[in-house]
Image 1 (cartoon, rainbow, N blue to C red):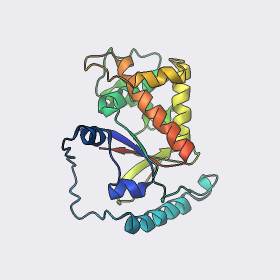
Image 2: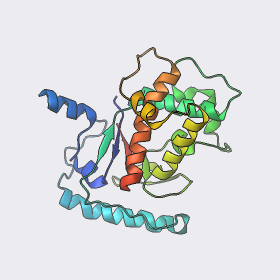
Image 3: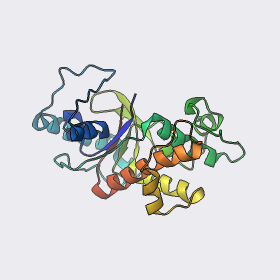
Image 4: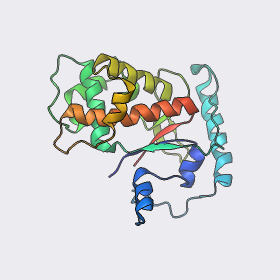
Length: 234
């Protein structure tokens, strides 16, 4: 199952008025592209004009619920037509999570190649109930990053009423910068190059993590610059 990351107004996302990287490539090549999802959405509303008021109301309700926990109310433009997407895939995204977990636990030796991160000892340490994290918005099981500066993560109803975990795109970007400073110390041009070629399936954990890092870093930058939410799509 593919993993895409979407940055943009949630109106476009839930209306389906956006293309993931696979769709864009298929359109450019003139071939059909089929998305298979675990939930059927045959009756989904796809008119942005009908979806937008509900999402603006959801944004306000979430902002009110957070109250004084955030410095200013949540406020992004649901009428915007700007968006950006990436496709790190689960393996590269998982490798990034592992890379961050091992950066937090230097006494553990990372595996040479990607392994399922949820079974990994460093990941388990980083996500333990009493864990202290240096890169929480990278490591924790987050589905949405909101364009607001806060350090915590929280669970709440997503716009489709599913319970999801939320973080901050500003804290995510800060965590990614700190992870780079701690480990690679790469400049932005190098980070961009990491995302140009997908690593081999038997590639090293580090190379696989770099590919995921490139996507997430550039998307988080865009989310902060445009003040738009960021969301995993799978």
